[in-house]
Length: 270
Image (cartoon, rainbow, N blue to C red; front, side):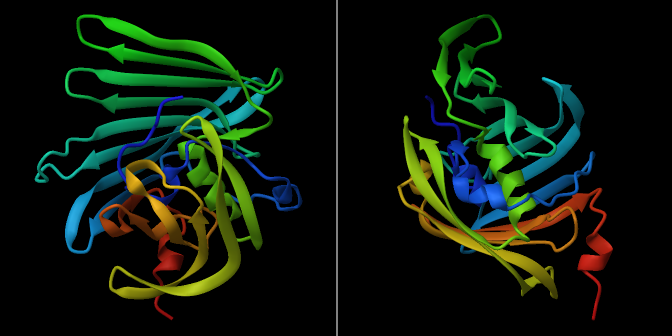
């Protein structure tokens, strides 16, 4: 299995494939989908801008009789940084109710080609179909076309972010099995269910807080503890995250947005 993400840009994109723990069966997701939602984030190490993220909910569809939402994230490095040139796109078709993945697509820009990956999840037969291609303008090459066993509903790197959004108002301390580097590893996510004050965009506002710990060294040296803050409205917009990486402490913060119904409530002055 290939590594999906190549830069420590956002907390929940550290995760590749995860099957959710049994502890979650008693906790229900709570999330309001919004087609047309777009969230733009800055990513910084100290005062150095590493890049940006753009998260979108593009539309809805039906797969295997289930309502799904087509979500996309763009990952772009800062063009002024030397020796770094990342412009990748990741798509996930996420189950509207269960918040798990049905299809995952990635387009990673390399020096002379696009590395394309597609995962199709067949839950009825507990199989995942994996296809990886090296795509060029003039030709292409299939690197892998295979299937593998999956025990249960699966989260990919993008649906994991939406799962966190849906769960953040709950109180649950979960150990999640993460499929990384061809092995199942563990990550702990502590959904505190607590509202905390957050300083953002020159104001103080309430947010739901979670934290956790990676129990392995992830992509780009991501490791150890992480923290995240989410808006208290139905969309549970990720507002800010802090994590550790090989460069040190990285901060991700919401800068721009559209089609966020809770923005006026969130930034209201008390």
